[in-house]
Length: 360
Image 1 (cartoon, rainbow, N blue to C red):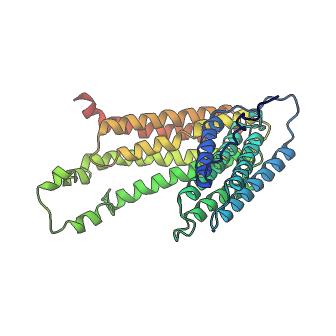
Image 2: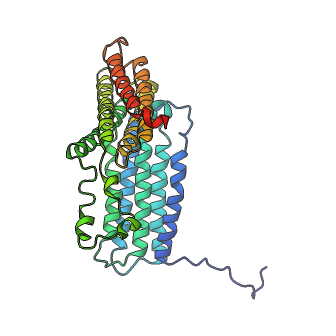
Image 3: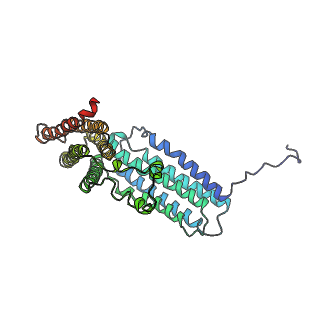
């Protein structure tokens, strides 16, 4: 029998409410790397598409509801007690883990492209909730900035996006191809606008020039302001830009044609081929960006040549994979060799114009 003088079991002391929120934010952020690299849960059961999407939407609603509750109780006085805060934090953590658990149920054989979209949405929700915890833990409840409401809104928006995610891999592929078309289109239009205005940095340095119009002196070079020769293209530069623009235009045409082929001929059950097309097509936009950035003065012709060659290699790989896939029912279709000829013509011209620097 225990001695009457034995000390009583110590009751664990709960951390203050705001400290609990900060701790929960840390715990949520620790989940992010696992979501990024986590594999689909292995199961012998046949994948039930309708059940998956229903559960994903239901758990998203649950997360949104917990975000609303937490924002409400921590945006007014008095703040919840440590015991109440612990309960709120447990509910938030449970809702987030339930959502992640549903994401893990989506198998790779249903489409890597679609799985990436679901993973991205999952990361947005977890990160948004972590941000909300951080803001609620440091922002006074009566702050006029309403940072807590802004963070809550990011969680809410992320949850609201769930019903808008494509339901099959073909739709996901079309979505990604459309985004890539838009990215390349924007890059092309920016390059074209700069060339037409013959002023690559138009609008970027106007404010600096106005603010320093009365203070121009030799200190500018020391402070890092570019000199005139760094701001404009030489005649050789302008001549080299022409085939570069044509190459980017061919990139845009390539993506648009592939998107049409996937829309018209793509089959939902040809998951792997659609993934391959999207995977290689995703490399076009970054390659276009690298080329676009390299044409701005001061231009290094060798860098332009290297980046052009990288883009050409990607485009040819895209065309090769597309031609061999089911979306091209007639591989002998003339558009592919025509586009390859156009790409080769651009690259040959770029080589001609950069050969002199290569020999130096």
